[in-house]
Length: 304
Ligand SMILES: NC(=O)c1ccc[n+]([C@@H]2O[C@H](COP(=O)([O-])OP(=O)(O)OC[C@H]3O[C@@H](n4cnc5c(N)ncnc54)[C@H](OP(=O)(O)O)[C@@H]3O)[C@@H](O)[C@H]2O)c1
Image 1: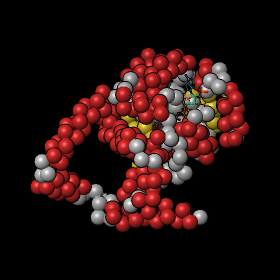
Image 2: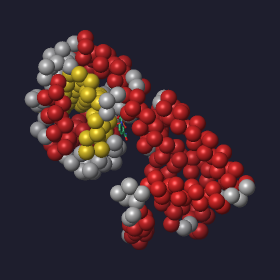
Image 3: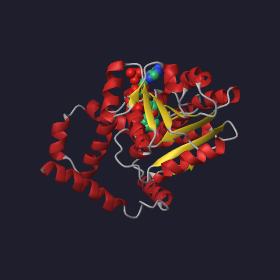
Image 4: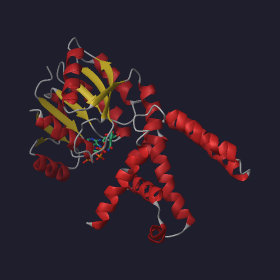
């Protein structure tokens, strides 16, 4: 139902490579497309797949087309290749915000006899095994084969152990991303910035570090080494992030008043409300145990 060829635009990038390996494993003939020839050739040779620098040639015969390029370039790319695709092809993007990508996909499947889907893998290029990670599906539409193709792709991802979350509209997706991506990224970015502003070298702090500081530092360090443009776009270009950021600023003001007035009752209330909120979370009861498991991994690594 899905055919046997896939072209990945942005195939030399982090996520493009992850999916090139996945589709190759599932027997697809994989073609990578990107602009920089040197990197494209290196990656295609490493993965033992094809490459094509000419955009039209790369997509015109493909059964599946995956777009894995920066967020801001994705909508224009979708509109550009829409007319180049063969009949009944299935095109999908994997970009982290859907506000502009989704309408572009909707537009091209109304104008051409093709199928459009919008996906969001909730993991980065560092992933080794997809089991129990999330993949978000936003079904757009297309030809009479649309449902069968989407189901076949869903089954393929499920066979890798991915959990599929279906979302009806791009605004809901972007709202969730403001919370599950934007907010933790922001807190970790701010943590390192906060330490720098205090002005004590990290090496000195490490002589004093406790457990929480150590783990928080690891999270923050892993974020600030990632794709800075993408992380910027996820926050700045998502109006939903701006909304929750205003709530965060209110929270900081509230916290500041709790500190200034030494209001232990309101401080306790934050803990008790937090416990009530997290109670149903399957990790909740064992969170302290997991915390020490992460610590154990770090300590073992220090001894190696
Ligand atoms: N990284 C993550 O953790 C993650 C997770 C979920 C979703 N995503 C989404 O996945 C997409 C790709 O992210 P990534 O981290 O894989 O990015 P990346 O590593 O920077 O790769 C981007 C790729 O796109 C190519 N490219 C850029 N502009 C292009 C254009 N105009 N035409 C053709 N190729 C172009 C780049 O090669 P050239 O520069 O040589 O063209 C490169 O191959 C983004 O939309 C991102 O939001 C990323």
